[in-house]
Each structure stands twice: as structure tokens, then as C-alpha cells.
Length: 173
Image (cartoon, rainbow, N blue to C red; front, side, top):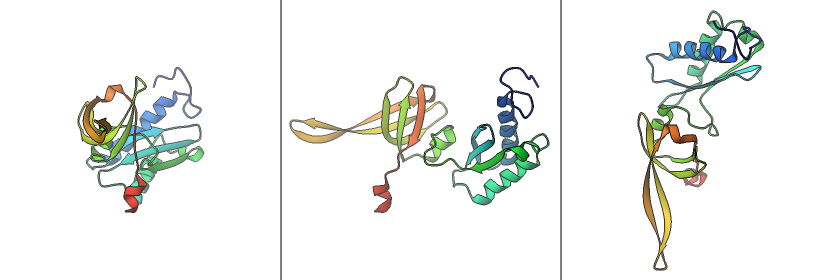
């Protein structure tokens, strides 16, 4: 391991390498399943692993991944000093990987672009390099209110952050 740069007190190596070890261990555990890794966050004394599944995550699946991580050689000592949390991303977490977009087709999204603009609409489709968002814009023509439908093809490399917009009024109906 190359141990130059911002050092972690755990290995005297960069924190990025710890996250990479955890990512690798999670990928090994979930290989061959529908479950996918979303993100690993490693603030000073807590390690948070976000995983998801097209059918949703069960508590038992998160517990199995947690037990696996705690048994991986080279990671065992870390969890004596660091709290480990394995869960699906919460409602407030932005979408990070394409499989999350695929899972949310038909849902409302708010997309902050790298240029600072924002696009809101319904996710129509998702592919390798981007996704299609359908925006319904209110317009006035000849004093009458109507709307127009605009499809935005959005490349992932132009997105700063995407969040699911939850409309609780629709849920309560």
C-alpha cells in the first residue's frame, strides 16, 4: 500500500484506502445478487455503508453485510474503535449510482446541474451515461392556462446532485 498523503490513524495510510477496502469487501459479499453498493462514508469514528436493491433492502440483508465486514481480515480491528452502520440510503440522500436511477423510474426528481441550474420532473428512463427527465411546465396562452411537456436528456457527468422529491399528498390519498 502506498501510504503517502492524508493519513488515517487506523493504518497510517490514506482514508481513501480504508473506504476502498470496505467497498471491495461489500462487493464480494453481494456478488451475484441484485443488491448493489451505493456509497461508503468514513467520518472519523463511524463507517456508513449504503446498499440498495431493486426490491428494497431487508434488515436481515444489512445485518449479513455488517457481519461479513466485521469478519474480513484487515478490517476486524477497525470496528473495535469505529461504529459500523449498514443500511439503504435514506430519503434525504442523493442518488449516486445508475441502479438507483433505474429503481426510481416514474418518480419525481429534483436535479441540480453543475452549471447551477435545476430541473424538476418525472424520471422517464435511465441508461449508461444519463437519464431522461420529463418536466411539466405551466404556460399561459391567450389568457388560458395549460402546460407543456419538456423532455430533458441529462448526461450524468453534468449532474451535481439528484434527489427524489416525495409528495406526501399523493401518499395520503
